[in-house]
Length: 164
Image (cartoon, rainbow, N blue to C red):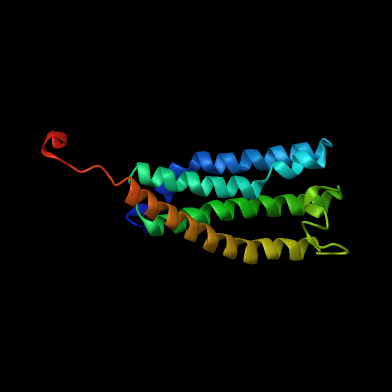
């Protein structure tokens, strides 16, 4: 399957460091939470922020490397968001199975205070509403940024001297 002239494997190769960045932030957050780090630090280490930054970096990479267009932005956003949501769901499941009190089981992150979601509903919410809305918003943001980049920094024109 090709998206904007590029296969899924090409997307994965280009964005591999971004997948690693999201995973590293996820691991840091899990380790910091289990180690008893202050909640202020654990709140700052955000997988959602890492996902958003990864989308921005992906758009810059696509512009600089002339890698596809707006359809590729949407595909990259979906892949990065899916990876992020799968990691969050793994943390929710791990928290539920171990019974450890982590940030993923805190009422302010897993439902309304006083009415927490069950881990199953929390995972379903992440994989439906979280994935869908973040993909739409991230794609819109990424496409706008790509458009701005293309207007302000147009691709280099091919001249006779650069063809040699």
